Length: 190
Image (cartoon, rainbow, N blue to C red):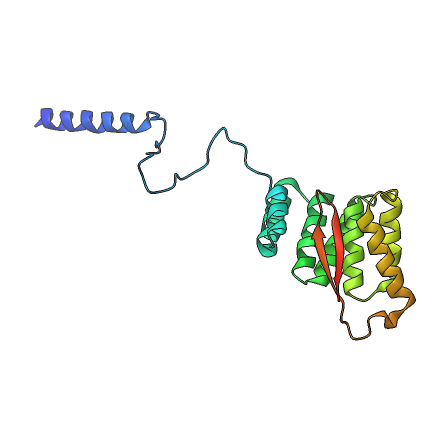
């Protein structure tokens, strides 16, 4: 009776030791119809800002906002992240949230031109034309007049400020268009 107990004990000990040995993990079978699980080691993940910018360009504003929020969780509340979140909120029509985020971005870096421009767009959408004109003037000055889109945004805001009856029926609508990294264009349609 001692030999079967000893054999069973030895078998259990070998099983436990075998379970502790590294096996290299699960291998992905190319013929499998299922996606591999877990992380891919050695591969760099794509930055949430880049993903968000691509989703914004594709008109997927809600998904872009989620990508920007993931980027904020990874990198912190940088001026780029806060400005991008504000832009996504603006595109979703969440003007109050967009204004808050863009103002927070400017608290982080008061020289960040895209945040000034986007804040101006929010203020125009809220019909705060005088403040929008001042904000666009700041963006234009910080950009040294290099951006035609900011110049056009400033022109529109000044026209609206000077003539509040410029668009009495609200027939014009503004839209924000991303033009390269950190550049947005305010377009109007009549």
